[in-house]
Every structure is written in C-alpha cells, then in structure tokens.
Image 1: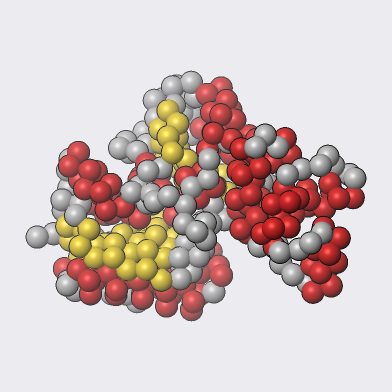
Image 2: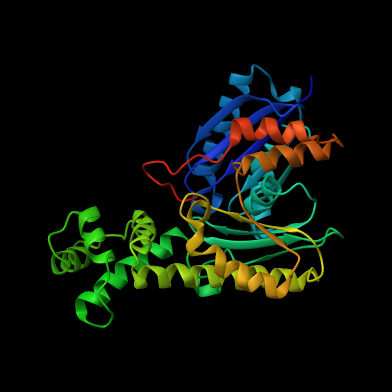
Length: 331
C-alpha cells in the first residue's frame, strides 16, 4: 500500500491528512496556527503536532509516506522559503514539497493542471498556473500592498461603517444593530469610547454580519461585499493577463471562508463580471473540498499516480467543505 501526506497550514489552524492511493483518509491531525509569519516556533510546533497526530491515527511511520506536500500560508517569497525549507526538512520526510496554500486551494478545486484561484479568508490572494507551467501570484500582502478585504479587513469595514453611520457621515445601516448585539453594547457611543479607551481590537467575527445584513437588503453591507468581489476579480484578471490565459479554458476556483462559508452570491457575480472580460472561457466554481485535498492530489502527482475519478470521489467523501461552524473561522 502507498500512502500520502497532505498539510494545510493556515493562520488559525493546521490540518494534516494521510491517505492511501485510493484517496481514502486514514489519518487526520489538527492543531493551531501554521503560518511562520505569525511565529516561526509556533508554526513549526503546530505543523509537527498535526502531522504526528495524522500519522498515529493512520498507524504509519514517516518512512511509509511516498510523498508529502505542505501547503503553507505565508509561503510567498524566497525570504519565506529560506525559513520554511529547514523547518520542514527537520520533519525527516524523504520526499516532500513546500508550496503556498493558494496552490493547494487551486488543486483541490480543479481536475486540470492549470487554472486560477482567488482566496478570501483572513486575507485575500490570487494565484494561477497556465498550461505551460508558468505561474504567478497577485496579492496576499495586505492593504498597503494593494489588497482589499479578507475577513479581518471586512470586519474593520463593518465597524467603521457603524461608526460613520452614527456620526452622520454615512447612511443608516442594519450593521449597527447587528454589531451592537454581537459585541454586547447598548449604543454605538458606548462602543466607540470603550474601544478607544481600552485599545480593543476589532473582532474578525464582525465580517459575517455583512451577509446577514445583505440578506435583509442593507445597501451598505451589499456595497462592501460588492467591492470585495470586484477587487478579487481585478486580482484574478491580472493573473490571467500575466499568464496569457485569455483564450484558455480553465477553472477559476473561489477559496476561503468568506467565499465558501459565507454566501458567494454577494461577491461571485462581481468576480465573474471582471474575469469573464479577461477570459471568456473560464468557469467559476466554489471550492467544495478542503484545500488539504489539493495537497494530497499534488503529492499523488509527484509519484506519477494516475488520479481516477474514484480518487476525487473518495477525497470528497472525507474532506467536503463543511457548513460554517459556530465560530466561522476565517482561514
């Protein structure tokens, strides 16, 4: 029997999965933050903990793993890989690869070797690979470096919209009542002063209120989600043009909790409007399998395994994207 290891190391959690060549999940491990940019030792410990848990549950040892793929948040530039290569090498797998988590997100959402992905979780990102194997990333470094949105920044947009409405700089919004209930304040004035006086951080959970308010027809919430979609479309279109994919047929995969665990109808049409101008033949799809499935598929391809439909079906059985959890984790 041949075994594979896939790892998805994100900003809030790390998932490790061991499968056999049929795609049957036989080991699963979970731990905390796997992004080295949030702490090298923290990420290293969590990645190792998730991997060891998965191996123990699968009743296999490292030498049994034919190939391992680590899809890690923050694996963006050579400066990152200088840190990540020795970190992952210390795990002692013979055959392995390290890629950005955008790469495994794309592979989990398409059966083609080429395609484009847009991610909107705690942050935003876009990545693509064309039929020649050329690849490019656009975004992933925050607002100051050109990005807009993602859960953390969308939460700020919610908070500031409530403040602006209270001050009269913006129209009234249903986000006000929803925010006060979530944060347990009697008035915006009390919330305003408490956050300033205590130096409180805006909780990322506020982002999910955008969908609740938009569902009730709130134009402020709808406008923020529209801008999010437009910005993601701009990033994906830039990737498409840089890779000369305008005439290609490929999947544009939408990844991240804002898109997969929110309600993509408030953002997807604006993504589609932009990318269809850039590449009329692309197909939009929302990720239905956890990104770690992409790490497994990449690992299988590294050993030249022919991936049958039954493998995709098996991975989906075990790793289908679940409905939004109570905590609505942004990753």
